[in-house]
Length: 169
Image 1 (cartoon, helix red, strand yellow):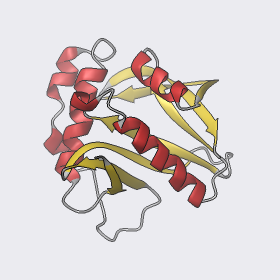
Image 2 (tube, helix red, strand yellow):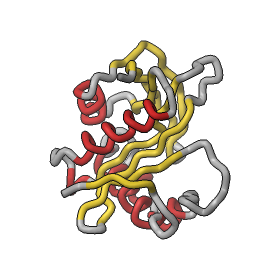
Image 3 (cartoon, rainbow, N blue to C red):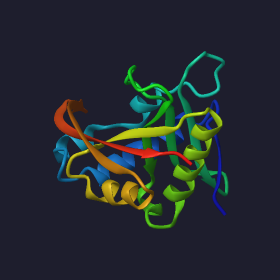
């Protein structure tokens, strides 16, 4: 059975492994293969600071089964200053071996619950254009593209991202 908890010190490499594997599989065809092959969990893990006492406005939660991290989400206040009372999902990744098992649904449900506890009335996230699996996942959870696009650089590659938004219960 999958449970969700806050990420803690020691989870960094496991979270990074989920992140890298999901990128390497999920972004095939959107990001060049040679770029995806070069991404290493050890480099990614060095960017995380879970439960180390540092003050941060971001929160990372992990979906766990039998003490194995299957997925994670990082969330906080929207980066867009003009969007008061709006939360943002900065990352939500499920290990590809667990796609289609409801792990992502459990995780996003708990993320929305955390947003509600923090009195956010709506939330947004960004999806790389062409990532149809992610788009279907979010749309199935009540998110919709709101028409805003931006250019971003992901792993050194220029991409277009689409903003998805939803009202929170």
